[in-house]
Picture 1 (cartoon, rainbow, N blue to C red):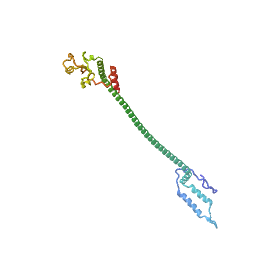
Picture 2: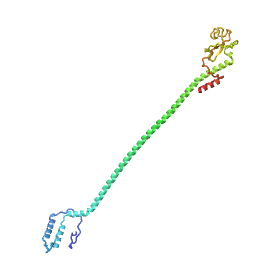
Picture 3: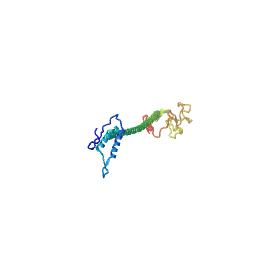
Picture 4: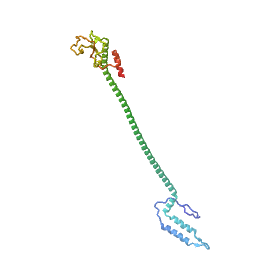
Length: 286
């Protein structure tokens, strides 16, 4: 260990080695050395005409070296800590900086995690909203599609119903057509051959006005027969077979098998069954 002051009065290096463990502190001896040094300085002879004093250099240095040798280990440790304070401060500062950096990084990670969670939640909400919107749109589209199909089906059903009704009407009209055709054929035969409708061969015709009642004149088709002298009709007397001779030229209406049919139209009736059918279909289309 080097002394604090050397013999030439120059400042020496301090002993900054770590203190030994187990050394004991003797405060009384160090204090005695310092008190003795104080007495030497206080009892020194003053220099004439000056405020300085004359002190023995060797004696003072010996006392100082003795005091240094007797300094406790705590002072040496404190002196060592003073020297190492920069390193300690730098070390602790680095540790503090590391702790702060770790805290900041952790805070940033937490913030990022929070932002990620918030973004994920927002994205999830958007996906749910989009799915609900798509579901509503698809439901409306399906409802519109079903409504259109049902409307088309309703139109088809109505058209089918009309076709069925028309078919039934045509089936019913076919029977009427056959009856009308038969009536037309009978009327045509009556026009062509009046004798085939029950006229007597010796019937006398009169150019005068007909005595046919108005209610019988509206019947169609009609068969003409000569009245009896008493004015009765052939089917009203007791001579159904025409054995009674006719003496007048008056004509009367005899009801035939087609008298219950509706009256023919104003225009000339069809001459054949084909013409009657064409007339019926023209009226049906109209």
